Length: 112
Image 1 (cartoon, one colour):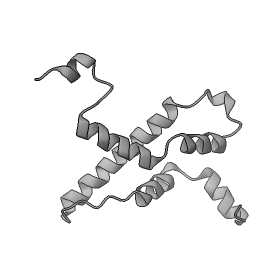
Image 2 (tube, one colour):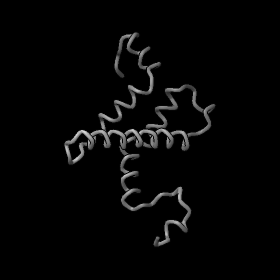
Image 3 (tube, helix red, strand yellow):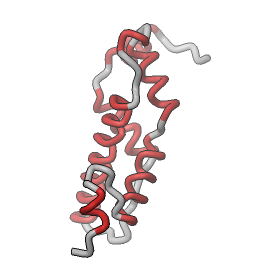
Image 4 (cartoon, one colour):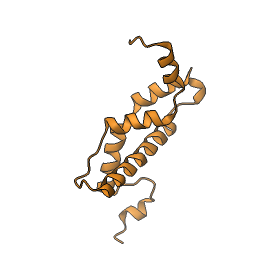
């Protein structure tokens, strides 16, 4: 356990999602092979899409909201179920294999 000042503790409890998203993106930073501004912007947009997919996964795989005593316990349980890094790896794997579960099986097997 860390001891933090009450002001910092309060901020951590009420801070907006942008701080959390920035932390996730920095801890899973992707440097594109090209150093151009466009490549960096596109990689950032793709990482933001990964964050959206990650948050949706947390929502879809969670229990009923009433089963969590607080928002913090929901966040901790969600992070233990599936990390952002795991989400990014599964997205890369799905894109490489073009294995999107949202498509009907007939679309996946067609040779169009």
